Amino acid sequence: MKKALIFGLLAAAVLPLASCGDKSRDYSDKDFDGLYDSIDPTPESNISGYVNNDGAVSKEISVAVDYRKFFPEGTPKYDKDIGVMMAIIANNSYLSERTKWSVVTSQYESNESNINPVLVQFGFYDLKYVVIEATDNKDTADICGIYLGNHILKNNGLKYQVFMASLEGYPSDVAWISNLDLGADTESYYSIDGDHPEWTNKKHHKGFDVTANRAYNEIKKYIDEKADKDATDTVVLVTGHSRGGALTNLVGKKLFDNNIKSLAYAFNGPLTTTEDDEEALYKYTNIFNIHSTSDYIGRYPFAHMGFTSYGNNLEYDFLNTQNANYYKSIYNQEFQGNTPENLDKLDDAVEDIYPTRDGAYEFEEAEQYEVYATQEEANEAANEIRESAVNAKIKNYAKVEVVNNSDVLTLEEYPYAVTLATKPYSALKFASELLVTVKMSDDKVGDVINLVTNGLKFVGKYFTSLIANISLYDVEIDVSKFATPHIQKTCVIGAMVAK
Image (cartoon, rainbow, N blue to C red; front, top):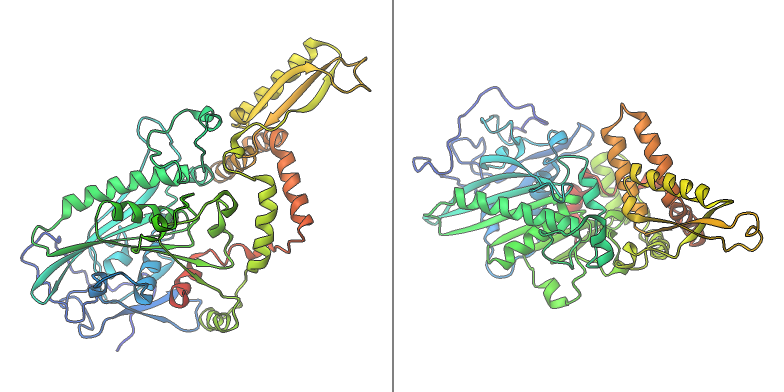
């Protein structure tokens, strides 16, 4: 078999592809790989191509696809071939990184290749990219992008329809704020920015729940628009990486709850829910959460707060000698990742900073900040601090008051004091604002400096405490090893060895 080209080097020949609603289409697909025989260069082989990454691999990975597997008899089981396909699709669903991976199975383009060439190469049609945005200017950070498509399969004279929804977590950097908005069903949390009408399950991470609800509505709308009334059966495939993995988990749950047949493959996604009923958690046999044991993202928002995920959990460990050798054989480099044991120690340190979900949004005991000779001076200082809180965008996490000085050594000369109380989660709120500001305001250095200067007045003690606690727990964390266990190429290979 002649190997296909790699990376977006698609041949000049362009075959116009009709919509799935076109009854004149010939649906013949002898190998059931999603490519109709009329455009499949190898119509009797379901090897749907080869994977390469920036040309930086020493051997290619073959991708075998059989659309009949999307309609399993009985309870769905994790399937390695489906996992690899879903991982590739998820990792090509970042708007800025669509060409990072390429699965080239045939030398053609369609008029939908500009939307998502990988979905085209896996046989999906009627492609659509939508960005989920806030309505009524509420919860504006709870957004995502979705790549949608569908495919008609004929088998034994019957017609089946496969829908695809690949969730892109970051159409905008403001989604970082959503990642860190875990929420709590408390008055203190609601005092931050009011109610959240689209947060329908208070056990769920607030930012993920609102976004997933919005995504589900858009997916359902597409299904209703493109449904083939002659189809004997339909299935919805959902996938996503990182933030998109968390959304995949909750969208997969919602599809199951609404009796819509689905398979949801989530890669290296954060945790999503504090549901503690095991039957309620594990009844979602349609969901597969695939994680690297060296990836800390899969431990957020923190198990000690009760967070977990729905469905089946699978892991892969590239620090394992056999898997490490396999990784090296593919990428010609050593795997770089922190050990699970050290990540456990990091969890212990973080628990000291954020012991409970509800408590993260409650004001801690006020600390005496500064003392003054006159009440006027104290009031001026307090107002300056409040103004700094506004500039740092964490005003609802800081409470500043003028009180009587409680320090007997300075009481006589300085009878007035300014106290400052903050909520523990203000540190992560500040961190999210800082990430967004740095990413979106590279040409506004002054804005970034201002945010850092003002923000540290309120949250510096938490960062200091976090560093101190990490050292107390003797955590040997290498920051440079945080990225590799999480990035796309790792979970594509991980899908092959997960168990």
